[in-house]
Image 1 (spheres, rainbow, N blue to C red):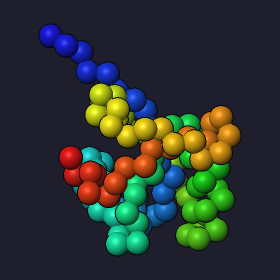
Image 2 (image 1 turned 180 degrees about the vertical axis):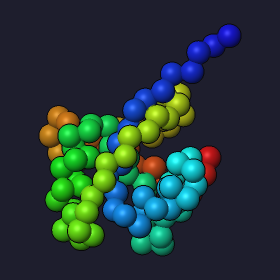
Image 3 (image 1 turned 90 degrees about the horizontal axis):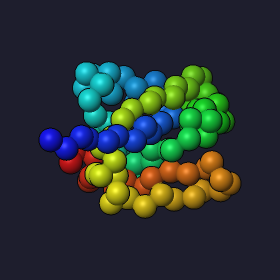
Image 4 (image 1 turned 30 degrees about the horizontal axis):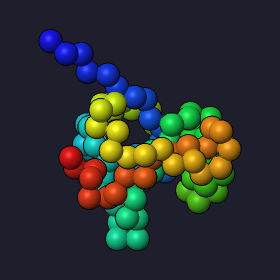
Length: 100
């Protein structure tokens, strides 16, 4: 029997998106809006906290950082994107792949 390995990802989010995740019983991210063709989970918790503080709090008055596990083999189809320094890394998941 093979063992499934998972990778921890983080997602900075505002209250509206978090409510939609809650409505799914914490099982999926909501569909992206037309102006959001990419879903950006990050691979470093500190980076997620920084985004929540610098983006979500000013825009929504509050910011959250979610943590979730994804099958590592599944994630292999999305190359890690370095958006800055060593720990500023994220995945760029096309919106249409969120329901896979």
